[in-house]
Image (cartoon, rainbow, N blue to C red; front, side, top):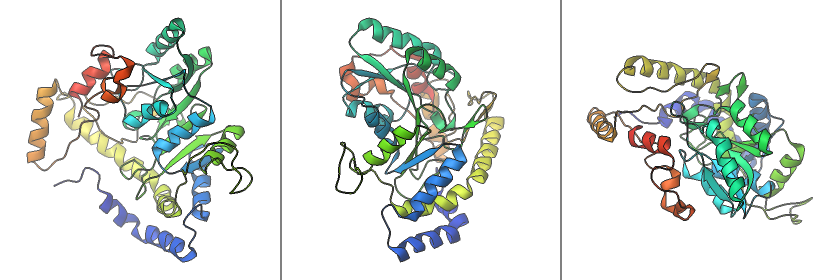
Length: 350
């Protein structure tokens, strides 16, 4: 049986370096905010081209912390895609703000900038919510269309929080993922392109004031010392062992990206004409968090999955139900047909 994500084989390639780094942490006993955390933040910043990197406990907190720092809460609207993992919209609701879902591009599956302005105009016209921010998602390892998104954000004066949980290492028109918007978030969940051996995440920004607030929020709103608290925060630190794992994986990461792209090219070559294969527009580089294809319909998808399973080849469906139709967001009043592209893709993708 083929592994969907073969972490054991990946570890074997880097075993010597990872084991040595973990042993170093065990020897010095600095399990929380040890020197490996600071080293990792420095190297992540160099890799992406970001002035500040604030590591944290997971990708969800990496999304939550910037929204907290910006004071987003009840009465605010945050615009995002319905075709993503729950965490993207969950963090908006956790703060009492309202997620406003915008349909996706039928080829990239990322938020459609052409529909974004219309959604913002509608919220302004309704007058019940105040537009505050946009959370584009770099889905399946492919960056969103930041030229289009930036144009809309500038017009309406909105913050951009790039959700690059699946796309660390991707490139959009010469710039690395995690370098877009006012802040960017990524995840180091084990199955991500750059994953640790537990939970982890990071926030990237060039804003000095925001970086200072984020460092405070991730440690219970800490001020000048451990027992001075200047704001409400979280316990959202990345533990040192995970940083020790990520350092050698980051050093080898460009090779991982190259291997993923070679595999994806082979898939596309073999599957072209049988399914709708992923589009990578000119000027983009995907890191292929998933290689996702479209069947003709849900029946063909199920049949293909059954046959692949019988051959020992695993498949998954990301995502079977768009967020606007999830029970957790039932109170928002969305119904079937409101976001037709996301709904259609959900029926066919695997």
